[in-house]
Image (cartoon, rainbow, N blue to C red; front, side):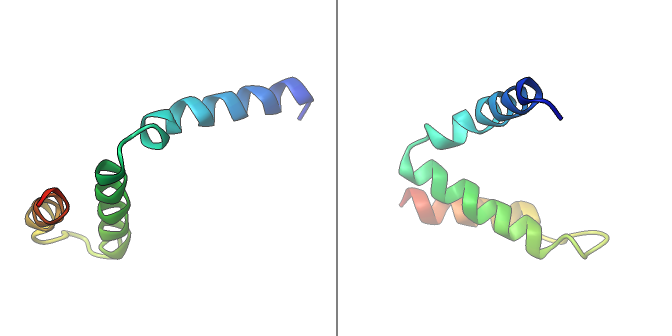
Length: 63
């Protein structure tokens, strides 16, 4: 892979992560906790109550 390809990949990753890196601290907490929740439930064929769990995360962080 040449240097220009690496630069394009770096730019693409930065542009993808920009909304997360520029988010406020509560939003970052929500994103991190939801990602962890999804990771914890990846092995399940039908993750139960994930919407309720996400809602609880949001409520907890916002309060």
